[in-house]
Image (cartoon, rainbow, N blue to C red; front, side, top):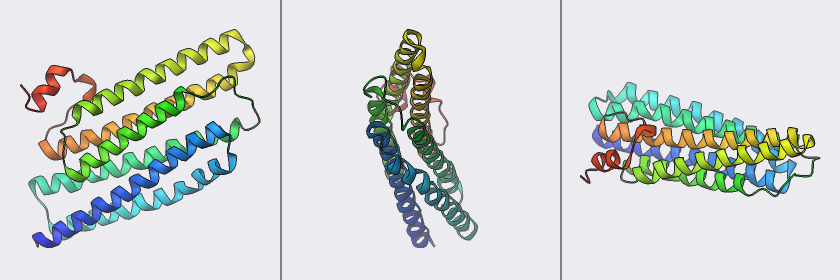
Length: 230
């Protein structure tokens, strides 16, 4: 029974890794499409959302079946039940990539008021955070907690900078109001993606330790205590 359970758990992790790869690609393509004004690429991102939705349903059914047939308890049950949250967060990241792609189409005929610098950077940080969190899940390893907190803070700071810069452009020229508003929305989408990636790591933390922690409340001393460095 244990051998079968381990086999099924590995399969679930492999499928979640695949879903994460699909989602990350949607995110990359949506921001690349924004930067290059590639409407056709943006449309493919929107179309791919159905594939991620289907993968979400498929994985939920697989996890439910394993719980029903294996009757896991204690850590095993916590591990399997927590995968629902990871799957849901991945699906929501895909939805936000779709939102970005819709804004690409909305701005297709406009000349950007400025080169895009912070939005692509925010995207790269969000992708790095997502990869880190998924790898933590695969390995059930929370040792990079500090990196997660640092990345989330960087994403928040960049999003704030985007909002501030766009507000300045909009106040200088009313013609920038629509575009500035859209770029603020996109920065917010990427900030939410960072939140979802952090949620995944928080779920991994729960799987490993059995405790929930709000990472927004962590300081250096608490992180060191959590990781057993003090």
